[in-house]
Image (cartoon, one colour):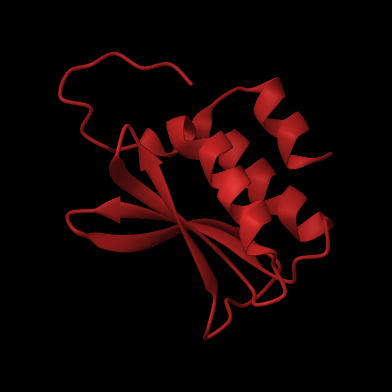
Length: 106
């Protein structure tokens, strides 16, 4: 299943994000993970492909201009592909993010 298919299928945020990193790994990216912004720091969430590299490619994930997560991948990842994926998953990365009372449904 492709990243686009995972996102289009929808579902619980955790399931979608796990599916996205698995799909990236299935596309030939050696490792992919999503780190969430929590109290000003990044905390690694779902990942696929074994051990995280020491020098991952990093793509910010923003929601309405605010950083909510970071898509990380092994150096073999295409940065342009990661930028597209970051745009697709932004809503799903709001797990635990303070939306200031604004209702959201990915």
